[in-house]
Structure formats: C-alpha cells, structure tokens
Amino acid sequence: MNERKNDFQNWSEKHRVKNFSDIKGQNEILEQIKKFFSNFGQNEKKALFLHGPTGIGKTSIAHVIANELNIEIFELNASDFRNKEQLEQKLKPALEQKSLFKKSKVILVDEIDGLSTADRGGLQELTELVQTTQFPMIITANDGWNRKFNELKKKTISLSLKEIDYKDISKILQGISQKESLNINEQILVSLAVRSKGDVRAAINDLQTVASSQENIEDYMNIDDRNKEQDIFNALKLVFKNRINNDAIRIYDSVDMPLDEIFLWIEENIPYEYKEEELFKAYEALSIADLFRGRIRNQRHWRFLIYQNILLSAGISFSKKQPKTGFTKYQRPSRILKIWMNNQRDQHKKTIISKYANFTHCSKKKAAKEFYLVRTMLKNPVLQKNLRLSEQEVEYVEGLR
Image (tube, rainbow, N blue to C red):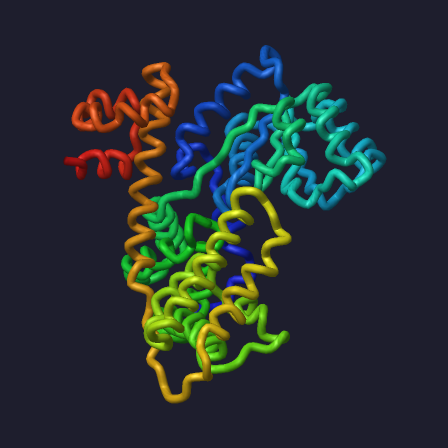
C-alpha cells in the first residue's frame, strides 16, 4: 500500500453522521426519537435516556437531531459536574435560557456512567432537572441497566440501542474509504467490521490506523492477531507448565482479549496438558470459575472476581501433580466462530420477535412461543414490510426452514 500522509483529524469525528439516513442499524429507535421530538411539549416526559454499548452512535444521534431540526445543541459531559452545586451552575441555566442563534435547542448530557450516588447529589439533581426543563434533553450512558439509574429512567423515556451488525459497519467503512480515496480490499473492511464487535467508532479508528500505516494492510491485521495470540499463549504456558505464585493469579489481566474468549482458549487446550484425574480436576476448576462468572454477570457480585481469577490460574495450575515439561502446541478455539454466528442469528430472532409482538399487540413471551408457527408467514414480503424488517432480518427469515 502506498504511504499516506498523516491525517491529524480523528476520522470518527471527521466522518460523524449528519442525517438520519446515515445512521445504520437503529431504525426502530430512530422512529421513537423522531416521535418524541415532534410531540415535545405534549409529552409528560421531557428527556430521552439513550443507553447501549460504547461506539454505537448515542452521541452522534444527538448531533444528527440538532442538524436535522436546525436547532442548537448544548453538550455537557458528566465529568464536568459531580454534585448539585456544579449542576445548577452549568446545566440549569441552559435548561431555562432560549437559544441565541436558533429557534430552539437540545440539551445533551453525555456519558453519565461516571456519576455515582455518592457524588453529593449530582445524579439526584439531574433526575429533578429533567422534569423542569423547557427544552428536550438527551442523556446517554453505556450501562443503562445499572440500578443507580432506576429513578432517572422513571422520569425519562428509556431507549436501549443495540450493537450494530457487522454488515452495516462494513458499509460505513466502505463509504469512508471512498471519501478518503483508499484502495482497500472489501474483505479487509469486513474483517475490521467483525473485529469491532458492534463498535462503529472502534472500526473507524482501526480503518484510520491501517490507512496511515506504511505496512501492507493484511500484514497489519495479522500482526495484531498474532500479538493477541502470543499473549494468550504465554498465559496458558505459565498456568499449564508452572506452579502459580501470588503475582501470577491475575495473569489474564495482561491478555488483550475478552474474558469469554479466554475461557474458550483454556477449555480448548486443557486436554493437551492434562490426563485422567488431572483432566477432571482442571475442568472442574474451569467449571466453578464459569459459575462465578455467571454470578458476577447476572447479579453484579464483583467480590467473586477474586475467586474466578484464582480458579482460572492457581485452580487449573494445581490440578496437575507435577509441572509438565516439553513443548505443547496450543490450538485456537474451534467454538469461537460457531458461537459468534449463533449469537448473530439469535440477535436477529430476538429483534424479529420484538417487532412481531409490537405489531400484534401481544407480549414478547407469547410472540416467542408463537414464532415457530409464524416463521413461514414471515417470508411474505408484505408482512416483512409491515414489520419493518432489516435486510439482515429478512436474510435470517429466508434461511429458516
């Protein structure tokens, strides 16, 4: 690839979406947002609470609204205030004063995850202010299901944004490539989209990185994957072939890989290092670690992290009587791609069931039970249009038997 001049402007900002038509994968949410703004003043609730994973466009949606409606946007990050006094100084005036240059304005309070109930009334004051504002507000968070937001959600319209499908991210990257006159193979763009795991901003940042790299793009992609694999190889080698000490209990913290994938790597390679009774003990340690992982994820019992880490490191390491010598070729997990593909299919099924439930005015639970009865009907183009199925959802339905 030809050397490219440095572009000091961040591409995620440079190519931020400007119109509703540019936003991918959030059609259902966008309709609710448009309805909120068109009916503002008649609504009992005066604020939207947008939440979902990082990089899926929560902040961009607020900017698109300001652009589409030709109104001012007043943006405030939660890091700018921590208590009631700071909120009154910075946010309250914006909620009361008219825009100087536009007919109206929207108030964006971004990334409130950092606020805690211990922040001397900051979150409580925000909850009170959304009830008195003269202008529409948009509040964003990554983890909208955190219990500390329960009162805020009661006073706002809460909308959960979903991760964006890799096909939509790939289209976004193709558009940016054309604007930047990049000569990048489409398969590389798809790979970047898949690796981003629904994070559009991360995918765009990766694209900018590979575009400015003097190395061949394929080599850049392979180097990144090799570095991650080298990290997990070293961690597995330490756990499987040595006696773990106190310093190595958190060995996986240094591995640049999601914990779910680390579990799969361990599961895949235990049989290459353990036999008979040792094999049973190693899998038992992994199983109990997985049990703690479920409790941490479902019940927010973060105190169990220490037990999970001990089981994944010392628990598995001490399952063998003696450290094993010699070279072992660790294998890439065969289940990762299968699990990822199944998750994609399950996600499409869930969104279709949700749309079907709304269309027929029944509960999602009932719609899920009836899904096997109506899935043939869903192949009807008219019904697909009425349900507003996306291209990916139509592909999923067409593939059903």
